[in-house]
Structures are given as C-alpha cells and as structure tokens.
Length: 149
Image (cartoon, rainbow, N blue to C red; front, side):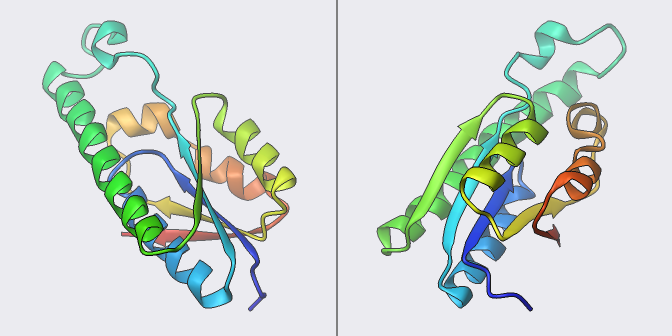
C-alpha cells in the first residue's frame, strides 16, 4: 500500500458520509497524513419547490430534507470533536459541479487518496448523485477508496 500524505474525504452531507469521514480520519492518523473534507452541496434549492408533480412524493422529499439536516449535524459533531482533540482537518464546502471541484482540489492539494462513500441510493439521491462515483473513479489521477456502510 502507498504511503498516503494527503487524503480527501468527499462528503455529500448525507448519513453515509459519516462512515467515509471516520475512515478518512483513521487513515490520516495511520499514515500521519493531512486530511481534508470536501462537503458537496449538490442540492442548493428546495426540493419541494422544484418537485415535478408525481416525480417524488412530498413525504419522501420531507424525509430526505430531514435526513440531510440530521447528517449535517452528525458530520459536524464528528469533525469538530476531532479538531478539539487536536487532529487538524481542513474543510471545504462547494455547491458547484462536483466532478470539477474534486479535480481542482485533488490537483491543488496534491491528494494521494480520495475516500468516498459507496451506498445504495434512494430515488432522490439517484436523481442528484447518479453516476457521480463512476465519473470520479474514471477522472481521478489518484487512488480512491469506496467505503460501504
């Protein structure tokens, strides 16, 4: 295995991202690497406002929005606790094209390893993120670790 020095965790601000962040922290500690967490906010608009009739049930949109808020709070707790314990984590947030932002960060920060969650997607997540992991895998010049729940 390589000696990773710059690790990037991709967070989509969903519950599955928590496990990816924990794995990223563990690897950064093991390899004495710098850790960066990139929060991708790919749904900057209100789902209810743009929901086409019949596309997603209102109850599913409400559940998804609630899940996003809970995930954001949980991720914030995990990261802030690590920082309080003296482990430096650099955080970035972007609502731009995920692939473009990831490529830019990987190149600018000399990332050796990307850690990203791999999970089963619901209908809303598939509409928002569908195929994103495949694109990341094809375009990145560094190693990628997919973390399952």
